[in-house]
Image (tube, rainbow, N blue to C red):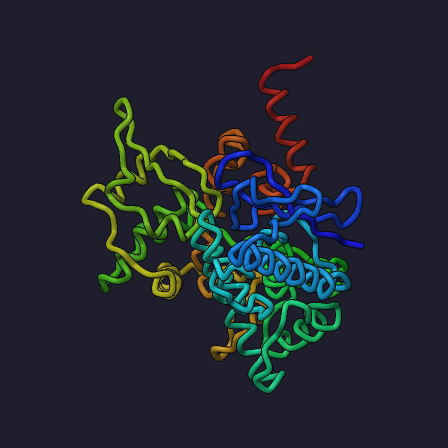
Length: 410
């Protein structure tokens, strides 16, 4: 049985009164109650203020109420799978003392907000995904639950199954939904650490991922890049998008980093022009040397700013003008539908911002050491990198053999 005992740890005139909460032999937590007392007015035997005046009687009454408050919180949470920690005890004390604004973190959307507000290290992409998760939950509440709010304790296996089916009906892929279920798990885990009760099944919820055949890797090879470079374009928007597209194929960055490059990112290091930037997704600082073709693109300055939607649209149109029309297997949206439809298309139809980084990685693979390429593209493992460019471990072995032959290894 859990017990709460008060104690002093100092002999100073205004000593803090501590709460020592024992759940079992291995779960004992101690935190300040927010109340102070002169040790002369404290009974060590009874672990309470000596009842010799009204002020001390009032203090004892507050401590008694705090004990009831903590025990009630414990009894309400004991069967929900909540993790009891020192932080949980501190939260109960703060709630009792009205030290924090009480937000009903048991409501999932409130916990998502709290997760964003209390994690200063979250990157922009993560915040955007969490905002999308909140939007998904709100729409789910409206469409499926008739306005009823989803609570943290509602997140069980049945909820995940229903949530998954709901979003598949909206045209979202299993892997897309899986990303948000992973975020959901992170939010619920964080809420649990704050003492919010969770469902006993929650820890059985696993990430979901659809196993599927790898897509054909869509890249722009060097010959196709030459076609794009030399095609005559009339619209300024197309000329500008071409610069971003070709520059992207030469520096190997994600669109979120590529399209945010400014003159401040271009530096001269010992006579060598480089682009230096901090990757949004990985947080890594990378320096990419600018090859002659890249220097030619920015000779008169960087292309002007463009958003991702327009970049994707204009890149397709530029590639169409350049007759990048090889038939490839890919996916694209038909009639503005949310889902992607697999099929065989002209390459220009399936070109998007992803083609830049992938073209860089593929075209320079075997010419530049793989670890150097990985450092630039931001891949954390070689297996991820090889999968990204459609290579296998056998390709890697053949490449090694070529190096050995050059070294004339006996």
